[in-house]
Length: 231
Image 1 (cartoon, one colour):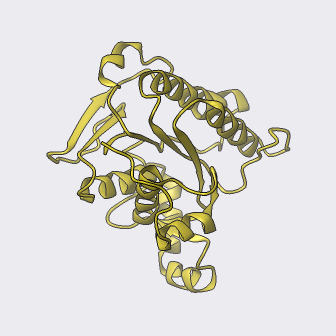
Image 2 (cartoon, rainbow, N blue to C red):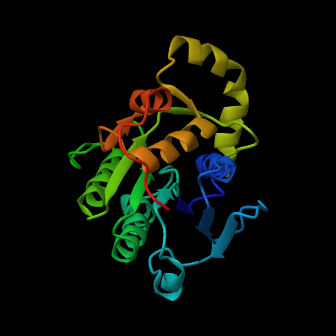
């Protein structure tokens, strides 16, 4: 399987990249980002690209992929709806529309968030924009597309947020994660678990296209339901 990864420098993306590099069935991983991931690996190739609204200049490098893991995201704190939608909706759709044209048999997996508003009409801005993004991605004619809605994510194996107050929050809450896992086992996922679940969904599919935290947890403990994707 050949994987394309957006957002490899973010906390979730770091975990996904690690799992892709460890997976023997992943032949190659190409990341697209504004800055290097800092990882060196024989399977890894990085494309530095500054304009996520336009991929025309690198289209010749975007074919031949079996899966895309879109982990690019930003906090809505301090942003207007227009600013947040440009990064959350416009960037995701620009990438997806390019990729579905070049790789129609691709599986597209998008990291969304718990509490997204699929009606697109709710009062919470970030949830409304995320819901609109999910709906638009699911309408594209990919082989299949899945929206991941993890809840609380525990950073492991060196994964860390690029946002300062997120890092501080995770540092303070680190001692609580073992307790939270015992009390809410279906709601707490780690960065490496999210990465493994994305690989499983890309390879075998899933019964739902919008996957909440408990669905992601179930995928990690269930048997494959579809034939593996070919590389």
